[in-house]
Length: 494
Image (cartoon, rainbow, N blue to C red; front, side, top):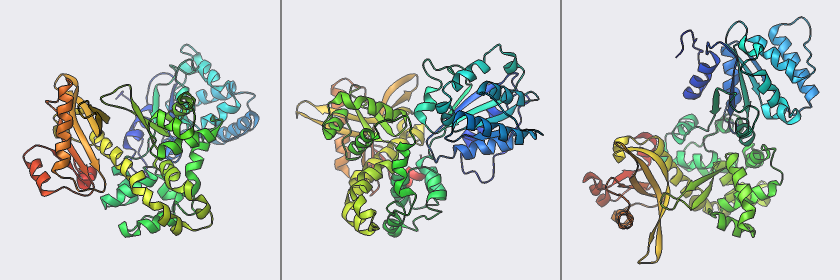
């Protein structure tokens, strides 16, 4: 830490976000000799505005939140709020963003000062030259920048737009000293935030609302399921109720990406993936379109953070796609097919008739991803004899039987000086008690990998189950033959 940097106290009502707060406060209080810039992004409802407003308050800085408006109106609002902040005796009026940005630089002449422009994409959309204005204002030899210690933070919810600010030929490429993405809470923190102690219930809730903080506070007003027995009723009174903000939220998430033109194709791609069509070929077949037609939508959905691409650990030319936002997956798999019933307030009927798809179509795939997340972020290095670096899924072929086997969790990592060593192969079962047969399948997969030249000497078989393990498999664990991960370990152990 640089000398002279002051600490900004984290608000008492802010849950978690310790790392994000540390990064933001380090940037805001950096005593460096010239103005600096940061880009903060993340999907809506993750608490970005809450974080940045708290940062501005803690650092006595200036916070301006844009909204959809013409350039003239935005400049007028900006001038009014800046005048109020500086306690100016007269209104501040700016003919263009050049003068407005220089006014922000002037705020930092006395020392480091956080200055936040929230919802920056709204401004840039109606003032396309604004990124270039900032590029000029933050020129390395410009006196106004060198005499200022303004810590400017640009924030936005459009991941595609914000990601593009610093990439390629963008005017702001190379201008930002911090690029921070505010992600949803991880599954353990999400359970804590929702106040859920039952691990099985925590998985069910997370498979619907993920780790988005606003869904508990603003959207369901702290209505949490009291237990497993209350889960069905909770589903019906929240995400399946037309009077609940959660009911339409999944559709609004895509609408927030204003750069998307034909939203129908994006919804159709999401629906295809949520229905279990996870490869580009199967998605194209589901939509009755050539594979080339869905390449661009898939890329855009990945840039928006709504779709996750996973590369096969053993066949690098093969990938699968998953819906990255649980609420969107739930909406396409469960809600959309039942909208006529749900719009008439018949949530219980719709859930009884369509809820059977919930466990195989939503919870099962989600549980597999949670297991991969556990290996990547929570498992201790000694669990696998090394540090996991790359965690994905895999497909192993058996030429003799002319078949192939899917591996739910594949971890490659570092052992000593060797990177990329195969550390583990794992199988996940949400609703099935796992036994010796599952372990024998993993041993067979390791033999097939060894036959094709893969080094499996460090690889450990792993069984993940939400339904438990047989005594025989527990005995194999005690002999060091397998790693077992149940819900208790998933949520509380390494």
